[in-house]
Every structure is written in structure tokens, then in C-alpha cells.
Amino acid sequence: MKSAVVTPWGNPKSNVVTRSPPSLASLALSGAITLKDGAVEQSNFHDYPVLRIDEMPKVEVHIAASSEPPGGIGEPGLPPLAPAVANAIFAATGKRLRKLPINTGELKQS
Image: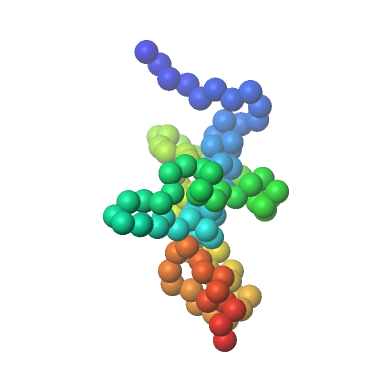
């Protein structure tokens, strides 16, 4: 049995990559998983905040031609996003944050 990417519009590869930033930005900015009495408090999306479409910046995907065999397409966009957000905050504020999720309270402290 063969598998295929099914998408009604656009380039399936760029659609997959475009979906990575909202997931990781949510983790970087508000994705704390907390424990209470030894159990995880968040059970689903109603109590685990995920960025909504109106909170996301525009995402542009550029796929470079390559003669290499195909590999994962969605995963490569994940690792650099949190450090990029942290570096942007450092560039704007001079404050280096070293823990995720990003605590905006730390930014408000001198």
C-alpha cells in the first residue's frame, strides 16, 4: 500500500512546513506543562494554549532544489524557531532568556 500527502490547495511540502511555526511558537511562548499532585494539569487544547491564526506572523516557505534523496519535511522547521524568538527578544530588549516557555514577567524585570 502506498501513502500520499493529500492537500486540496498549494504545495503539500510548503503546507506541512507552514504548520510547524504555530506549534513551536505556542510551545516557546506559552507551552508550559504543569504538574499537580503528580499528574499533568493540561488535558487537551481547551487548557493548553495554542497560537491562533490571528496571532501568527506571515510564514513564507522556500524549498530549494536538491539532488539529495527526500527526507522529513515538517520537522526541520521546528528546532530553529524557539532560539530565533529568544534571539529576537534579546535583539529588541538586551535581555537574554534561557528557559522555555518564555516568561514575559522576566522581560518586565529590569
